[in-house]
Length: 122
Image (cartoon, rainbow, N blue to C red; front, side, top):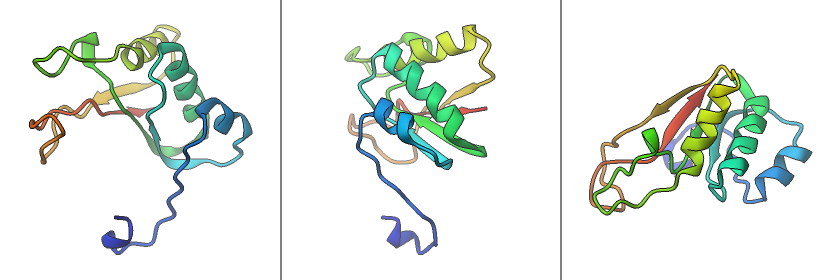
């Protein structure tokens, strides 16, 4: 898909354990997508590490963020870890802003436009 954009950008896909990756990482990034095990403590650690590794104007995108800890879809399915982690970060004074994307201009896997993606910015 990156090739189809016809732009010159460097993309690195990492499928390593996030704790292992960030513990050994020395690089900074413009964009980080977090989609790990979704446990609140893991997501908390991932975000803290990602904030250290993100460039000044970079963005972190978090998967399975459910605003208010409430489901987005009628079937009630959701994961609470990402929301809980961001709330914990904010309660400790982390200067982050979490922006749920809400909906996308294309259909998602649940035949709606709703998405659980959220952007985290410093």
